[in-house]
Length: 157
Image 1 (cartoon, rainbow, N blue to C red):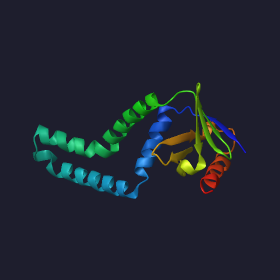
Image 2 (image 1 turned 90 degrees about the horizontal axis):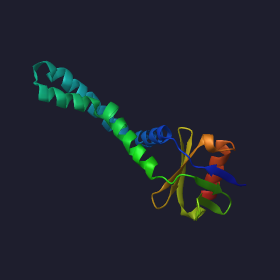
Image 3 (image 1 turned 180 degrees about the vertical axis):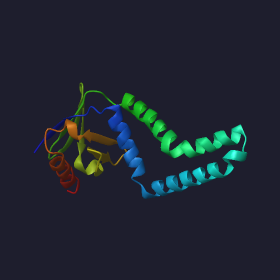
């Protein structure tokens, strides 16, 4: 079995995946929720009797996780997308993953992969060195579940 995938992510796909990965951690959700709730309560309590500087700080604190953090993640995703190789084609077969970009070729054996996960219509394949391939379902010719199971079964070998 072989899967050929052109890896052309859009900015929105990369951004949504980054947010999903970040908010997938339960501790991150708890800390963000507690901080946001505390900031809203502080703002409600001190708003009427505080000066402009304190109001600005309270507003920044209230908007930090629901607005500012996603906007910063968007700009980070934009930079990551600019740094990604364009025209990258990935070939998944029983031997491993062949990454082809122009004249450059690289081969990754299955034992070099750490894990695989599915988030937001994406398959994320993590290498042991900290890098990852993100494969959007729209780039797959096969069923995404079959592709995911193929990757999982080869990582476990």
